[in-house]
Length: 116
Image (cartoon, rainbow, N blue to C red; front, side, top):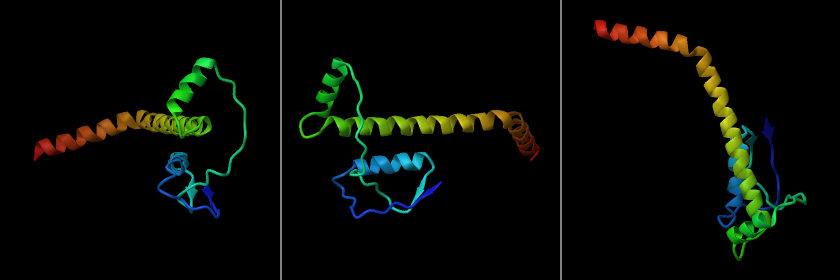
């Protein structure tokens, strides 16, 4: 999947969340021509959380940050780990399918080396 991202905004070192978005796109196999993403492109949504979760969220966000940013970073991280896990599972399934053949080839190589 290819995506051409264009915007007037510029990436800065002060905006590490743009790199989080970039890593998520990479983990999903998305190709893009710009190496940052514009955090101003947002959709407003509503979620319901327990009081305990909101208290922990506020404590984790601390002063100078906000809930939305922390939640967004957590969701991007979760989705990235999920995509990586799914990719790893596909890789393991491929290896499992060909494991016997690979093991036979390795035994042949070892046998050849023992003859030397």
